[in-house]
Length: 490
Image 1: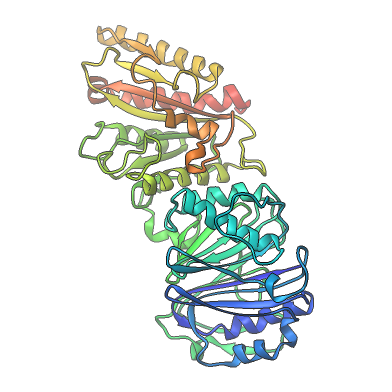
Image 2: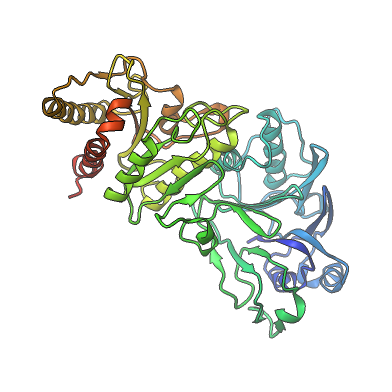
């Protein structure tokens, strides 16, 4: 079975330690080995269609003191597609956007060779994967910094078989784990203070304090644990991106790598949003995507924060104005990075809820409440929007309408002021709110299926200003009642 090895550090390093342990995998993978290193946009590759543990070239590279880079990708091969030969040996490289891109893959894919901009030299599914990936990035104008769209593209490819892979553009190291958990993929972080470690497959100790600079840090990714260090398994279906020795995408909320970004209320702060995963698995997300000034919908962030704290549900609050990046619209050139963060936050919640199947579809109902604000001149003081039923099931829409209607009638009797309620009248929701359910082909966002239910609720400014506590109460009631009503949980 093929094996992968990747390194990404903040300073150039030698791969001697990891490559030394990795070469032992060549005994069980006799059909080739290879290693790629980057120097800026340029990539240098050494590979042979022989056992890595018997290669004089591999031994030279292991011991060569000037063989350094911030990013390495290596592979040992057990052939499943294509004959034994240099043209079928990993890593594979193509020039793309004036830089070289290298890829190594573990698994078996059934991809079609159709209408490609880039073309394979050999017969492997892995080289075809690289050509298909670059063709897609080119045609869809996807930048290497758009991690969410790249993750969506990789998940789509993963539907065609088994796929663990590493690829790099020289700036990032992308690491994707097969969504069905095929084979293994582990990572370990190396940073000061360093200690002594030993290789798993060789009686060999090394004192990292003598090998590493104190300001040197980074990650090693491998199919199997190469040393006695505390390796962490990468979860199935997860893309992780490394840059300059840091993990810049795919870190889980409970990872120590995230501690510095968590505030005292449990919110993880990113570039465009802050999000708070539920302390225990939750089937509800509430958000305020227009909470940031200027042009904010006043008090929506406060309402969402209080509902989340009161009920323990998932929550997202925008920290950048919709004038800069609107999270309540389709992905375009102005908001794609922000939408990437937003959609990744939702995916993080769903993974933690354990509601997703192997195809990343929900197995039971999930409720997403978007809290919005309208002005006092709007025809309705409260308006419920489901994009005319496209973003939500009829049963959940009716249940929510009944709850809001009973609450609003009770409140209007108490305050002696009429509260006008509308459903899908004026602010019925941008089409993008249905993408979480049905997907969006233009941005490779697959959606999570018919069990994802998004409901947008607009509250007039006078209600948000004078009756925030009552709004918080009714939204909390919806959160608490949802699991009981639709998932039989008490």
